[in-house]
Image (cartoon, rainbow, N blue to C red; front, side, top):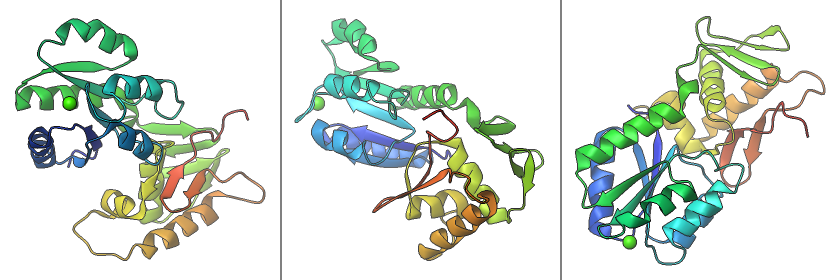
Length: 234
Ligand code: CA
């Protein structure tokens, strides 16, 4: 399992199908949209780990969408691979100046695209391999599998620990209950989505004492996220 969510925004359906098939075969979770404006809306609800973005799109163009994403706090570091048709290569400089991390000219080979995806995810997610995650006064030690807050150890069950680790690895990203079930419990077991709420409740009870701020945000109609503003000055 590659444990990453990829959003494809591409209006050529055969290409979307090809990309989806190959990325899913590699274990990535894939969502695809065909319009730039739809992608803009979707990206306000959910931040993927990587975006594959076509240059020319109906609604809002890829380049405009890229510019918008780079100007927003929650998406300014989102890894973006831009796709473009042959003949637009001269626009390469403009593409990168707009903020795409990488750039691929169509037609491209699938293995090359997969290699770029892997490389970009590796570069952008150093925290996935860090031994300690620290946000504000909360520290998660992956070696000891312990969480502490302001120096006091917090007792967590194994599921609450994994849930905390999963959310802390991706601050600011909103996960649906289904995505949390996939990421924390594994998608081979069938568990009711309400189970997620129960464990989030237990996690909150364990980490929040008295009037301490809750680092876990409930996003109505969507799910949960680790608040990316947590521990930062207001
Ligand atoms: Ca296109």
